[in-house]
Length: 247
Image (tube, rainbow, N blue to C red; front, side, top):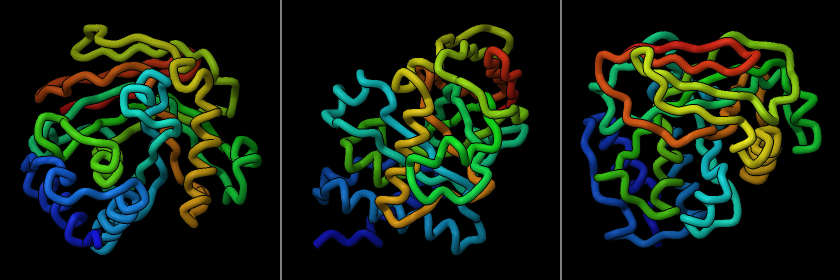
């Protein structure tokens, strides 16, 4: 039987000690349901330290990534207020951080079914996510990355705008004024609204509801790039303004 508490403690300690570890499945094989159990225990450890749930992040939101990992559905992780980066990210507290542009949704009321999630959106914004796998060399299997809270580390977002069609929003990410990634929100399952609906479906399937004030990060619009020290990152979304963060 898999000791989900021991596995969660191993990942939590790796994050707190800023120490990369071998993937867990090398010594303890486990499946996807067990991986999500590890994830929930890991997030609960953060909550016991005073952090509050702040939302959901989606992963594997491109068909290419699904094929690469041999899956036919998205994965998801949980966000806490301790992950929110309002103006800066201390990369010395991260193992090998990478940053990617995101579309963010603000939930305005409790979501009781995937069919009602779009009408529950109170705002949309351009955002970013900082990924930081706790595994050595970013090397993991599907259960490993799910257990590791889908590589969640930090996130941020710009000003909120009224809900609108986000199926083809141009996104540009710059580091120190130099463009490093450009793409469209269409790369997120063809329309990030599909990812939003999946967030509601997966959360409800796990016995959770999307709560008022929570953020849903719909997934990456481009590949992630390494996030260096002493850098200035700006992500701009057409019609959505921009968000900036320093390291």
